[in-house]
Length: 202
Image 1 (tube, one colour):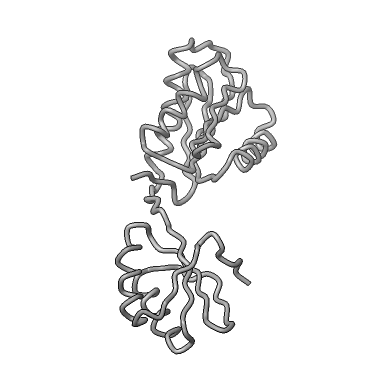
Image 2: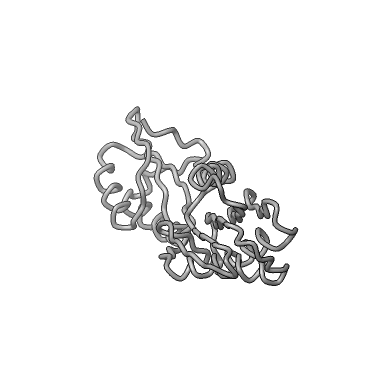
């Protein structure tokens, strides 16, 4: 099961006078990651490199930022992949200390900076959510709300028209059981609609 992080976690290493400041944090997409990196440059204007890696589905990226190709971003991304993380940004700010580390030394330094930050990070499982939409008679609204609460579903938009239309999300593994219970509670009066037409919450 993929995990993300509850909050940012940091590390700091000094290797042959070079300083490596690592951070791992939850980030959803590349645009947000680039803002974080820009913020690090503002915070560390005299740094030599700000390398980063993002594991976020189609937004994933690995950036060496001037380090020899494949010695920073890719190894950092490999650490995130090894830990089965998703929606996580790893950054390492480097201050060059005057001693070349070589390609192997750089790979180890960037890998260790991320790995040590992850040791301090709280991982949380990513539970896939499924969107559902149903219409029901007004007298059933209270009962359906109680069933949704008991199942851990998150209620979204509710519209009151000729019938009550309720949009909600539920963990993917609980969909079948919840639909069965709602159908039983509603005595066959619930109508399941296309969840792609879920109205926006007011």
